[in-house]
Image (cartoon, rainbow, N blue to C red; front, side, top):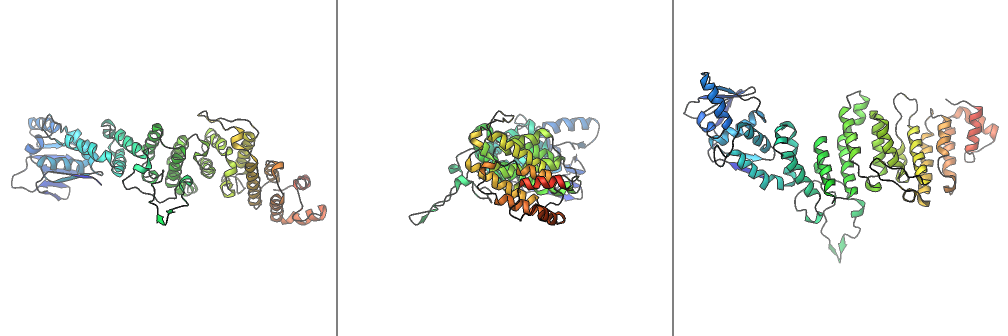
Amino acid sequence: MKYMKLGAKPDVFQTEGNIRFVATELATDIVITVGDVKFYLHKFPLLSKSSRLQTLVASTDEEGNDEVDISDIPGGPSAFEICAKFCYGMTVTLNAYNVLAARCAAEFLEMFETIDKGNLIYKIDVFLSSSIFRTWKDSIIVLQTTKSLLPWSENLKVINHCVDSIAAKASIDPSEVNWSYTYNRKKLPSESDPDSHWNGVRKQLTVPRDWWVEDICDLEMGLYKKVILAIKAKGRTAGEVVGEALRAYAYRRLFGTLDSAASNGLDCTRHRAALETIISLLPPERASVSCGFLLKLVRAACLLGSDEALRGDLVKRIGSQLDRASVSDLLIPASSDENALYNVDLVSSILEEFMVQCNGDEEALEDGESYPASSVCGGESELALVRLVDGYLAEIAKDPNLPLQKFIAITEMAPLAARPTHDGLYRAIDMYLKVRTYILAHLRTTYMIGSCSCSCVCLLELNQNFELK
């Protein structure tokens, strides 16, 4: 972390309760009130560097009062103390955690060059431009401090400077990264290097393209959005990397606490806003995010009661790559007011979307990108989908409250011609029947079927003769 030391005199500020004072033989002649803290100080060092204090002290002198209240100073007592120590020439250390508060406080106090050469505003601006904005983690730390200092940090353009600095560093060629960063995840699949040795000598580890993802997860949602938009605007970062950044942020800020918040009836406004922000930032490229991640987003949308349009957009994206999903991804819980375990209707709509795109009907997202049939469907894709559907059927068949009509509807959505065998479907049907033991014996007696020889036709006939609740 970069830091800057100002002043050379020893720090003689002392504290007694809510009182701060300078321990000198010279009696103090002014009281500065900041919130519940009172500073007993001397006029001369303060007024020599602060235009605002000059004005305030002049007005109090006319009233015969030696107390000035500046409780609205940004950064509060700690920021004012930095400014006061600078006026006294005492040693003070600025770093990424306190520099912005000091800068905003100096602006409030009008510590300009016109009052005194080498004043605090000038020194801090030099430190920001020459050190802070050039340092990866310091820029992130300063950006985090801007929220508590609004609107001062916005007016001083510090937010823009931090965002530009972070986005510029995240967009450079990874080979040029020579600073420390946090990285606890696996590299992207395209960066996996099976040949980590060459001629018996271990290769130097390369910086992954998504090296920056974890560090910006510390940002609150509004600032995070600004950074991602700035990175996307530079146009030098692959959609896959942006997608990984959004996935990491979702796991940090959304998925981890969503279930407990929803189940305990807590206010989910923050979660809903995070979800909508993440979805709005998704890159348009089909492979930029995994199908599993999209299914987690749609699950969150259902849990939070997001609007139909948002869920519809997610369904379209999921439909374009459903063959890449896993069975566990599809096991989305039903809403609390339903008896069923899983949201089968949602999965049905996703399957329908896949088949629409597979049959050549192009569906466009709001940003104009379309997914042509050739990019969605193929022999391997259809085979993967059939296996996915059969696996999904085997899982939802365990739900005793699953209506037979919904079970049959799912079985009929997978393309029949793509099935090399029907073993997976038979096992799913058998599981469905075993869960309903009270009809299994009658079924086998009436239809004389075994556990691996029934079919959808058999289930349709069963539906006509029995009412399953």
